[in-house]
View 1: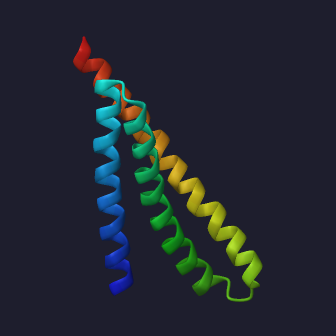
View 2: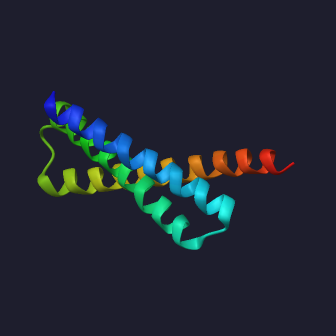
Length: 101
């Protein structure tokens, strides 16, 4: 349970900082903030993806080899990180476009 709380806490901090950088990059047209937003939002998604995929794989599919677990976990964590970034990128673009009108 402690690992879950730590993972959720870190993911929340990364997510919050990523959203800040994403708004800053959209409002000020700053490429550096865009890169930081991508890094922080990817870290948020990867932290959650790693924890959740390892938990599910360990409890349901304990017959998998280590190599298969690594491949599945890596794919799930990177996919969740990319999803978090692109979803929030679209939402921030909509908010900024509505404010500029």
